[in-house]
Length: 148
Image 1: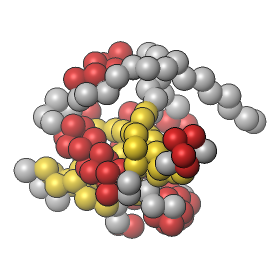
Image 2: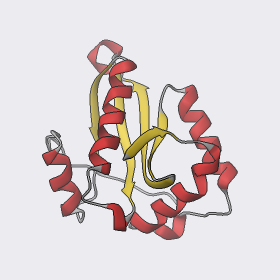
Image 3: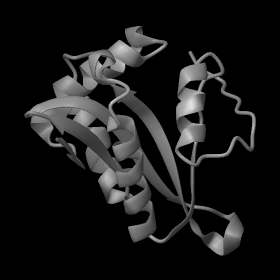
């Protein structure tokens, strides 16, 4: 059975390891900086968002960041952005990611969001199929600019 719940401090190291396992740039993650990651969780919670984890048999196997922000458009409506969706490689294709998306969607609805959105790197074709299969529609092309 999968339990999707808000992250707790003791889950942070496992969540960082999930990021490292699934990231295209794992070198930017650092398991020695748990307090930095936890600070980000606390800030998201102050802004009405959260980080959720998926737990199976007491073990964290998935993570998903849920960012809630007020839009200037849509009459100042609330919007939800999903980031950092990762399921441990040996736990994929079991519905865990879908359950995390549902939890994110529920949180967005509870917070009065009119839309939920996400971006996915172009090379992640499997992830694109996953999001499409879970009701998301590809409407935009994303762009990023990294700073030194």
